[in-house]
Image (cartoon, rainbow, N blue to C red):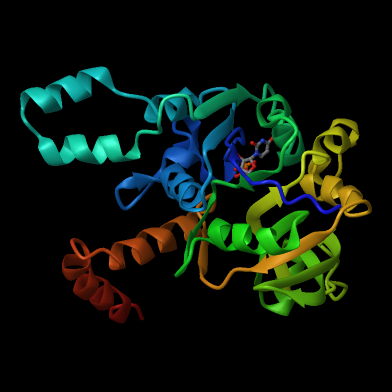
Length: 295
Ligand code: UTP
């Protein structure tokens, strides 16, 4: 029977080294870099909450304690804001504070790969399906990516992966899926390959960093040997699981920004700033002028 139990928990692997963003990430986790006025991780948590997620599980690493602090009350700040009667700021902070008992943190002691980071969450997830959101990737669309995935999952059950289209000559950079029969806003996945050699990709649909997985992935990851980059790869584990369980793809139609890379991060800041009524009027014209001044 295809498992359709409710997706209540979400895992956020935040234990990577963020080497592409050095030197900033020497002291600041990349998930805490700000896009406009919110850390990257807040966008991803908001996406999870919009999709109905009830419990947030963070797989952290050394020097990531600030992420835990961010999702807690800052007592001194709270007190000072109250003394100064800063109502708007107090409300802003209250709105983003997770409810008591709805966050959990565990540590990946060494960055052995995404597959290993996910495996570290096994006891916190338990025996139920879960969402996995890579916090580097932030998305802008009419409907949150995970919300659309949950809707598809309610039809398909099993495992669901979000995909987007890339230029065919870029497929070798990504995890790519093979396209089967249409289902809801997506299709059944016929195969998965991590970074296919140029010209061999089964399609141009790439895995964009959002997953709904069944708990049977955990024993597979436990036995998973190191793969590409000498890391324990999630895709290798999913390929094994796909021998026993169905995988569907949700075709996300929106914009995705890889905030773990400098170009993606800069584009995200511009795109999200231009969406904001309080910021767009003062940045739009200077931005246009800047672009026109380029030779
Ligand atoms: P990335 O490869 O994008 O993250 O992993 P990274 O290793 O931090 O980045 P670079 O390449 O050195 O700049 C995708 C996601 O998986 C997490 C990362 O934090 C990121 O959110 N991850 C990766 C872990 O939690 N643990 C790992 O061992 C590897």
